[in-house]
Length: 149
Image (tube, rainbow, N blue to C red; front, top):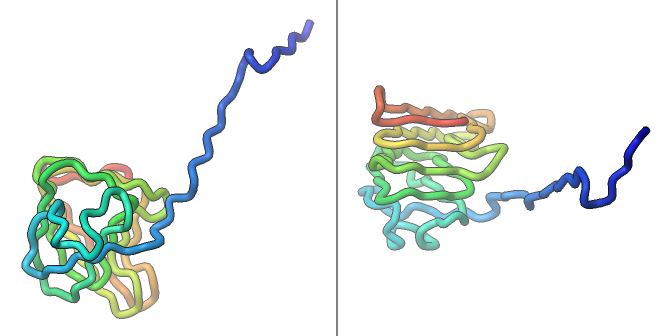
């Protein structure tokens, strides 16, 4: 005997999330470094979760630190050299196909150094377009971790 249930039995729920598109960039403004959470360091204020935080100052290097846990759509380091100290916190990235992008366009040379916490996302790209390059360095030991990327 085959039983067929109504909507109340064996109901499966499918949730479709809208695409998390990184449509707009929020640019870091100061090559002297500083707090990720300072709205004055960003072109559009602190990114939470959009627009996408983007480092593109063509700088030889500076330090940015987190002052608490953050969640953004993605993280882009285009033509820049950023040392990101997570301050013992977690930084979660939501975009499924490109959570972290280091080195995007031809001529970009992106560098991201991570320490002091957990960066969690789904996928990463180093040197996306021909003629670009990307490097990610994670501090040894328990001071820096990447999860899921």
